[in-house]
Length: 446
Ligand SMILES: Nc1nc2[nH]cnc2c(=O)[nH]1
Ligand SMILES: [Zn+2]
Image (tube, rainbow, N blue to C red; front, side):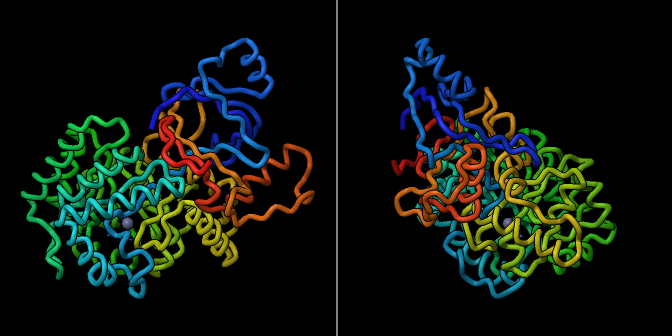
């Protein structure tokens, strides 16, 4: 992998807000991984003639290719990948006890962890996930293997060693004191790697697995090291009932986290399917964002998450694949399920709840970057940001999208929007012919 100075010339698409998709023919110039200049095709021609790009490699895209920002997966569980597509016959708490905790326990074996994580990181990069926010397992050494894989394959990654101190049948938890010591050791080790793409995340699994003492300790550590915090909230009705029973002084699930200091503007909560009106006020008042995980919400029968209601409450939302509660590691799948679930809610009588493809595309890119507090670096192609990007070829070799000559509109404005739309609805990893993270080419099918 070498970081060259490159100019991409062709169709470029990215979002500047939920309602604004910018899609144009033009150029982006990348120097040392950063976007240093961009503009129209005419400007490119002028600059090229003037010799401005003499030290750059010029990549001229074909008529069927375009550049989009890399996908951001705000929530996935790396150790659960071996279970993907398996054991989705039970609701959340039973599923965790029967399938998930026993698998995650195996990551005490560092060699096993290293092998799985190497595959996981490569699978996500192949699918265009340039940034992932990962849950690891309870183990420091095992989760450090995930950190090493992300560094090796040059993926941008936020990685948490999972914290749990409540007893369970699998014996998969730690005593509080050991847990807090382990979390600090994990954070210090990741920081010592001094890798600009990978950061540690404080990761209380959820309020079913963590008591107040642990969560208070974890929020202090997050503050001390200025780390993000990730967890799960209000995914499943039995989970909510249990959390409220075990925290009788709290009115809502959100209060349990808030009273432990977990809710900050560096906190991202997965699911949020069943938030109350009070929580819809509390989360944005603390700057908490949400990872919307439509695949696992359906697979584990958790519910249909009203993502429009969450967005309307001024909560920042990104998308998560939530493997292996979710059965698909691709953010393209999360985009499509976001559209489908939100449309189901609208058809069931909630007006304007459906998200269209442009809105779902925003959540998969800039929305995710904002939810992870990374939008100063990634999410779209503003000058000064890192170049995390996908080169898509709608009719690439092996593409499942057929070309019907003469069928698409001929005016270039409509044509480029239709190309992107086709990819969002029909594309897969075969159409993602190149992947760049901070200007480094990490996948190349060309
Ligand atoms: N979907 C999902 N929800 C959780 N809640 C607590 N742990 C998990 C997990 O591993 N997956
Ligand atoms: Zn999860």
